[in-house]
Length: 225
Image (cartoon, one colour):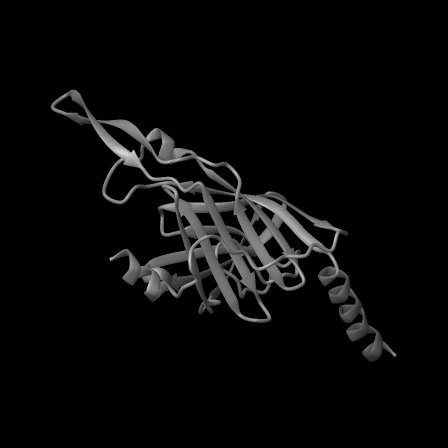
């Protein structure tokens, strides 16, 4: 009898989870600049909404900050020398995943220009670690991988929780035995979920699009050249 009840429990539990929507908020904080000093505007975290439902998820930029000119100061021989730089910030960002179709889409609007990139959902070679810590009330385990998507070369550290049985996370990251609560991109950026809650609402997540033509990352790079 027990051999029947145990798998039945997991089937019912899984069905309950996937009949709900998971909603939350996460922030992305830039910690270091590439070869320079972070301006005050660049230090401000970006905030994203997150929704998961029916094996799809979508993330949307909430705080809209447009590109602006910023002044930073460099110390030289005891003097502070002002330098002017342009801070490029997107007015719209959407990350979309369809786990059944194995699709990832990244839509972005920057300086009034739309981009619409569609690729196969990346599969990461995660290395699991026994190290644990509590993040925003969730007991999390550590995992690491190397990201080479979008011409990157980053060391990634993820902290995931088995308390949320959904194999997803921010940006295009997923594939761990639980939900990614915190993500560290080298030592330059950190993404942390601040709020997460299940909702009885069965949210419909539609395939997002904008004014740009849908293209692969290679096509996008060629167009920019």
